[in-house]
Length: 259
Image (cartoon, rainbow, N blue to C red; front, side, top):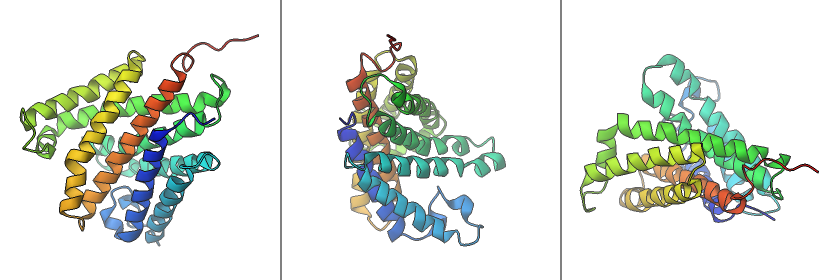
């Protein structure tokens, strides 16, 4: 029986939206994940291939019979997106965004890896190793998420809707602290289920309060779609972590029994 539920469906939906967006907007230079390929011959083809993989992977991951295939497709493309940032890191090692940005895709790679590892698991066994590795990878990703909000605090403040009570700066600080606490909880495996659940809610709130209105107000701007899709995918990955912990709370990290 599948151990990944609603989070997997949301994660797949985000991949479908991202794939469709890539195929509709065919501007290679507008896609930060594939910009390093701008000088590679026939690089435009990679954008089409990447969009198709996300679309197919997002569809396949919705169904138990094809879920592992979908997870493999998405883990591969998200890992490639992560590795494509290496040239940017080499060129500008002191620019934090060059280090922080890859972890958005790395967190999605982690979510797909959890789906792949947990799909056919019956309790704690060797087949869950990818899921446990994915869990750790996702937890690590929360550290640069936190640092990015600190280093680019002014940008974080601007994103908060002005009509929300307590002010933009308050919520910028609160969400930064929330990312930090979630990272500590998941890495230490203390209150990890509570942390992943609250993190999922916060990320979904980001989408509903920031990116859905942005897309609705200006649907012809590619940036709004890419940010919406990425936030939705990370929320899906956080939900996958939550689902994984719910179904494995007593066994996921316990010593294996023999005999």
